[in-house]
Length: 395
Image 1 (cartoon, helix red, strand yellow):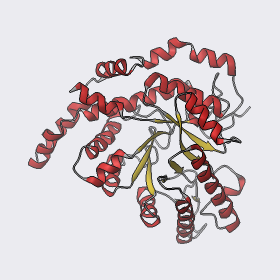
Image 2 (cartoon, helix red, strand yellow; image 1 turned 180 degrees about the vertical axis):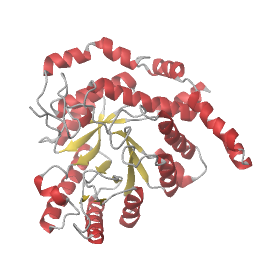
Image 3 (cartoon, one colour; image 1 turned 90 degrees about the vertical axis):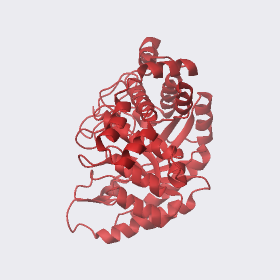
Image 4 (tube, one colour; image 1 turned 90 degrees about the horizontal axis):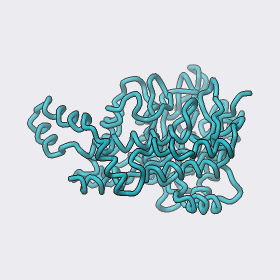
């Protein structure tokens, strides 16, 4: 059993975000962290350290223009020399003054054109870095009823997304993210998974939905959304984090580990199903972290996130699928529930320690990181930066 499970664990890949290694935080205050990455090169170094310790974090996502460089081929080569690759490209059309009323949904055609130009620039960066995914999130929306025409905004968004979709090279995807609210408090153009899904269906096969765990109302059943999108073949990826109240960007699995397990259970179930659409979708999902580590040590926080995903996945692999299906078919409500919760309650830490030993990484990556002196080394070399990661630290 362990050999089969270990083969599945070997296939797990978690992508870490460059912005999680720099100084970033809430819109109220960003606390400067000693040793936080100041440049994209240092972010790649930190991402490589997380992969070295876990063996399952082989790529790092970029945020443009936060991670802008003159030659992206050089960046890709540097990442490769550190044992990782460049992952999803994330455009930024939410920080400039012009985007106060939105980017691709803005009523001003000149501003929409500017935003579209940046998205197309990021398509070119995707080509240069060899990335597969263009990850799209928009702060577009309105704060007051009547502020703008909602149907017109929908058409503007659709038109821009179509242009970007058609510019993508073969094999590439655009992952369309949604968010319930913030910074738009009356209406957000991509306000839920249904809106993102409708756009993707209309636009084309290269468009898929990205699920950010923090972008939902309280008590929304995210695993049901995941199951639905898998069945439709349109689940493109995740931004893993956790929220207690809203989009808190906390370490994934810290506030609701059972939810994370149930999400992974749906993914594992689809991957091992006889349904070719769901199976293919599950095998093609991009597992990405999107977190803002404001008071936590950056690398250690990222390690904790990756390891929490690994633990949830391991537990999901332990679900007795034949027994679960039999109980479901028989209408045995509590037996089906027990099958699922038995796997969740299993202590997989010894099993994961054995797995790590087999693949040649530390059995306890957190302890290894703390004992390695890496944090002290980068703190000595980098000092404490005034700002970084796209969220300036206020003096």
